[in-house]
Image 1 (tube, rainbow, N blue to C red):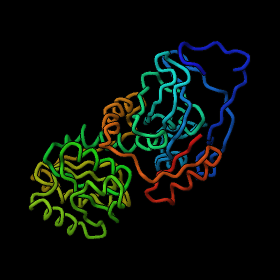
Image 2: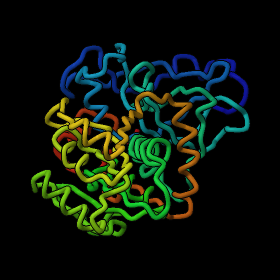
Image 3: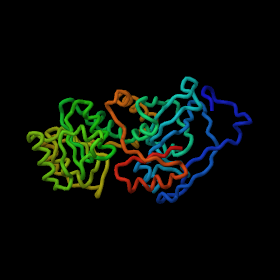
Image 4: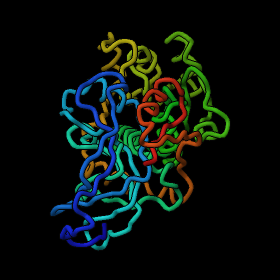
Length: 341
């Protein structure tokens, strides 16, 4: 469809359909099915995107499984996308854009489809340095990282951050953001970041997560001259929280975004207040597509300059193989899965 004002449907447009992944009840990825839907038309304050690529995040899998109360059915899932504006504001016609949002795929249809309708206020230019596939893998991970590192913990140049889960998508994004801010980065995970990945060239030191909480915190304190980390970004959470708290310097900040193994932990309140520890919870799901767009616009210059990098290992699936793409998320480790309609 052409850009500009909301079009009048002509004979060639009547009955036009697109394909989309849908689910009308919760369950494993087998509940997903490919269906035909009418081509969307931009209303006032809206834009229609021809989706070129859309990644499958673990949260998409959880969404289909029914782990988010806010999800209404039937629904097209997906959060992160990149594509081309085909209808909406005239000055955006043909623009290459990217996006993500905590409402997309939950309360509004997501981008695991050939076309997507979004508020025009959410339009954000895709970095030229990234392909559509690469751009579609950035949203959730880097917005989550930005919220925790920049907006919550206020990480400063010269400070040290320990990234728990550094080999994962969010952990890699956090390491890159922290490095750009001029901070020293210590990584912690089951395995080091793979050679050639952005995090591998950034982290100053690596601590294996198979050690005890006491040994992990002792090693981080050794690496920081006994003081501890100014910020611990815990992308794992739950089982790692005791080690994260014990690794913090005085007035250190803990950022929590997840809980693995257990949702509850015991905290020594005396140690907490004596150390003047701050704990921040960050949830990118609380930020809708317009609010997330403002963060992507702040991130874009770092990708255009080549300072930030999208994941290197991307597996591509067609929309017709969307169910297989979801199943692959469960078994492919740190590879990014992308659906290319």
